Length: 236
Image (cartoon, rainbow, N blue to C red; front, side):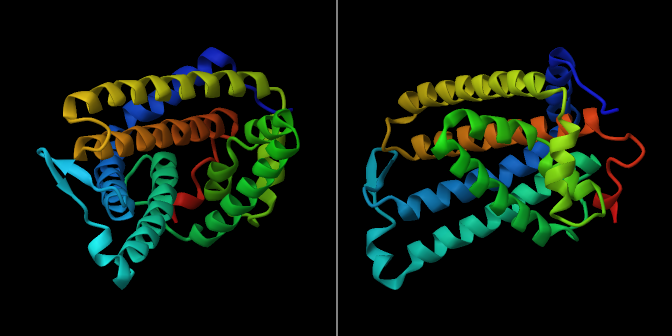
């Protein structure tokens, strides 16, 4: 019989993942936010205001392709960082193994494709798939099993807990949006939508949301998994 998790239990577990692993979260944000800021600066053809002075870092080097390379580099760093965040939260230590990295890339791409296609067909199926696959990546990283098996394992694990997971996801997204609103208000103080501060706060908001959703995925897995096997692979 599958274990189940209640709404209140999962809410507490999700935010406990963040508070317990504060050092990991801070390391992630300390790398991810500056990377996103740099990528935005090179990608923004309108330029930004730095202390009231308009600065355009993209156009003078566009012919050299540096902007494109910067964007690709930021994407690669984001993929590696997201893997690290999942694995580090699971292992509760900042130096997890990267042995399952390519399996993570494969499963992430496939799951995104399926969820997007399901959402395009009808919104509800996309939500259902996203909820049932909430612990997909943690299940992949923690268990030394074929990558494709994680889809079925995640689906089976969440049986009986779908509404709780959906409810907590709504709460997490609401918290993330509220923090983004605060960042938007800070943007006005920092010099407006075209300022360097706006780029920074936009990057911060997006990465805080990523942390919260990752914490939800890990908390869901930890709440539903066999406690004797939940972090086996990420330590190896």
